[in-house]
Structures are given as C-alpha cells and as structure tokens.
Image (cartoon, rainbow, N blue to C red; front, side, top):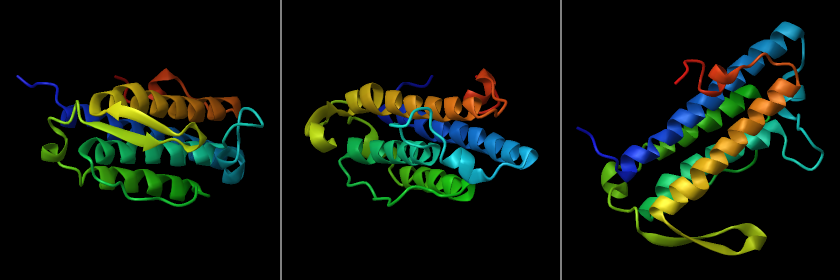
Length: 171
C-alpha cells in the first residue's frame, strides 16, 4: 500500500508539463498542416492584456520547477526570458522536469508543514506551508496556465479535445 507524501504529491508537476508538451506538439503539427508560422501561435493571446502563449508555457515551467525547491527549502534555479519557438518551449519544459528531479524524496517528505514566504511582485510576501504552496498555489496556477494555453490554441483553430488536456492518453 502506498501513502500520500509530499514527494508523491510533487509528482503531479512533471505530468502537467508532459500534458502541456502534448498540447504544444498538436499546435506545432497543426501550424505546419495549415501553413501558419509558429510565431502566430506562440504570440497569440485571448485578450490584449494577457500573456501570450509562449509566456504561459514559461510560467508553467517556472511554477512547476520552483515548487519542490521551495517546499524543500532550497533556492530554485533561475530561468531567463520566454521561449520564442516550439523547440524552446519543449526545452524549457524538459529543463524544468530535469531540475525538479534533482530534489529528492528525502528533501521533500515531512515538509508538508514547513513554513516559508515567497515574494510575489507588488503583492509583497505571501506566507505558505509546504502543502498550502503545492495544493493551494502551485497546482491551481499551473492548471490555470495550461488551460489558458489550451484555450489560446482552440481559439486559433487547433483541433483539441478534453483528452488532449490530459496529455492525449486520457486519465
């Protein structure tokens, strides 16, 4: 019998990045089929004041990568800039997964109630515990940004369905 631990719970993060990579592969193939420059999709947004698709991807990678490091009390690696191609989108997702993999179960387990603060831009510091950061901040934010990528692509005619949101293999 397995039990839920912080290291088990963190394993949802690479899966979400894999699901996002699936959406990007579908978008890339659709752009090629339709003769659309990839920058059209990468710079697309649903409203003028929202981030473009490439920045949504970067944000997913950053959120996922930061979580295990912050929960463990380790400074996360820093990434610069947003991807400018589908290849760079895939690279940042793979880099985030590789960085997350360096945080061990021993670093994470038992850190559910570890208290820490994170600077959130003009909002200032926000206080978290390990579990509140993962379940109340990181996972909802990643789902928001993956859903936004999905919606940007659907709005631009990429034929995606619910199963694609889950990486093409369903649940």
